[in-house]
Length: 172
Image 1 (cartoon, helix red, strand yellow):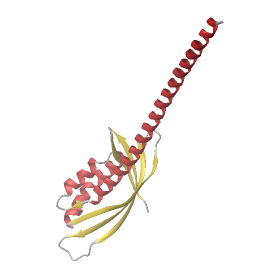
Image 2 (cartoon, one colour):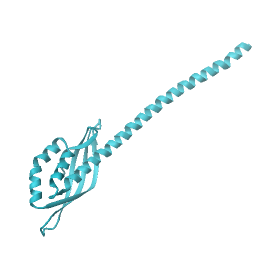
Image 3 (cartoon, rainbow, N blue to C red):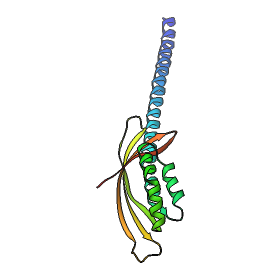
């Protein structure tokens, strides 16, 4: 009987130890999964913010045109775009430069609001709406400055670790 009683606490300790090992393994797996989900959520949030910021920067770049620096201004727009947005702007760039110089135009702007409409599942593309005000003045004339409200729908694409505007549409 004494032999049986001595074995019973050992079995009990072994069973408790085995259960603790299993419990720790389950907690470890849960910890890794929760941590991975949190990392994914943080990365998705960072991509959403980056997509919106890229659209805002592009809008500001589009509105910052000065007849004295128009070549650089146009190049900045081209450098921050790709695809259809770049092709369309490039197509009209020489005409914009000529008109800006001829009329001694200076345009500045401010983004009033920007928001994410959608983001694709792989987080490589998004659609952003941007609302911005621009003021155009013409040096050497008595023409009063003109204010313009700009509303754009922009498709932004993540490529090479950065966000680029790939399509631009005016919203009326």
